[in-house]
Image (cartoon, rainbow, N blue to C red):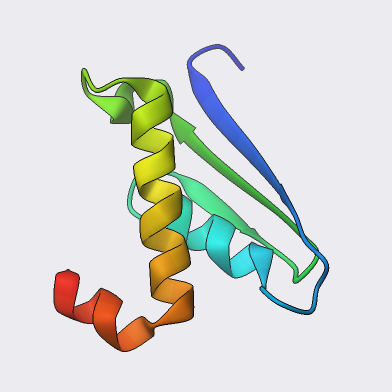
Length: 78
């Protein structure tokens, strides 16, 4: 899968639903989902649009975690 970013999520199934985090991470730019314990997000590298790929991924992950922790605050930021 050249040109595709794939992020694999693993969790304990207790503190967070990583499938939900994966879905939010790839929202609008790719696909993602899974279960409480396992998740996967995929999106084209082109979605990075000239930004450093690692920074882009960390920003998406941080936004996803914020939304899972506090949905009301994440909706205000959108």
